[in-house]
Image (cartoon, rainbow, N blue to C red; front, side, top):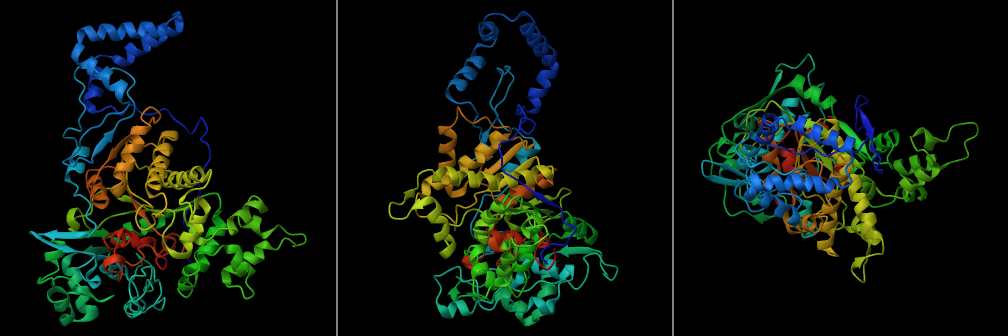
Length: 609
């Protein structure tokens, strides 16, 4: 099955937060402010002022406060005047971080006038260092060493990927790794010809030979290094193949396109650097046990586990991937139902004498809730799933191997709404848009946003559960999944959903880092249009940094951070975390693949977890 019984499973229901859930926002003061508060004994002074107001109950307390501010104006005229003007124009503060004009810090709304020593900059603290040190995002996923740059998506052969070494060190069965599990399937990218598609090797099965930290293991430490990559390729493919991949290879072998040149390097260290990443097997086993799944109200725990146990089997992945847009009810109504269809059909049978209905056994609170679930497809249900596991990136800036930081990064895989992939897109588009008028249906914009808010609530709840204080996120649903209809408004809705969830709930975050990527103008406009409405419960930074590099920099400085992997139905519903990581090139090497190819994320993959 997809997940072992020891995995803790949390059901997340999106509902209006109760008063106990919603906490008052933190002021977000920097260390200089904290020192000033202590030096001036402001805690006592403010408490005395509030006690006086409650005791005296003056008829016009506002006028009294204005008198205090007026007195402060006389003593610190220039500083306070600038502050008052900023409050009229903008309830949050924009601060530059690093060299990019896209970096923007949003502070929680100020509640008291700052002292004359107050500063509005990130300074030189560890948080600023991490932001400034992180490389900017580059969609070719470059590995840069000694002035040479090689694209992991276009130039470095998939046989040289670090995750292959990781799996070998874990004890993966190499015989399975060489098998093609799903025929020639997964034709997501329709630009290639039929002949080019047939060259695609498909997804390989992943199976371990034994337990991660079993007593038979000779080495108790997993090492990821350039030398280990060379050993792996030589052992599996031979010395000549290694030389060919490093020196001469220059074709996209998967679908026949040409790269500009061969790599022309002598050693893998000229791609990934000379550092070593090392981690104990005991630590990896502990991390595997911490993997948790968070779902929405339409996916009770027992039902979800049984469902993925069917659709994630090696022999079933291709079949259900091709039917991911088909409602579960339709599978049950087929004249010759598949395994999942038979399961749903069994639960539909209400005529079970003297026995609890099976739908109730599988966690549904009512028959109507069960019907609501099975009228949806795997793709639709996938937006209610969040896979969370602590992990480490093997690489830091510019995809250079780094030493393991003390703190792990919380890896989160979740999916946006797919508006751009065949039958799945047609089903989703018909819910929210008039195809002929190319606009939202009445009320559909609100229901679309509510669905996105539910997804992000699950993501942030996972972060809160693991104690993340400085989460990072990149744009979700705004790449391959973005529709041609109402494109700009869809970008706005995604960001409205994020910002509203962060205003409505306190997840214990200190700073939330968001790279809106192509939707940066839309994100900034949403913030500007709602500047009087949004009251964030944490600081927020809009930036243009590489999410993987930023998370690595934050973790290396001791911050409890996370990385959001905008994923796919096949990953969160069928166990294929990383999707094309093992063999994808070009278009088939995107964020999901890079995430899995350069980290411990494969611990959450079917066949390991």
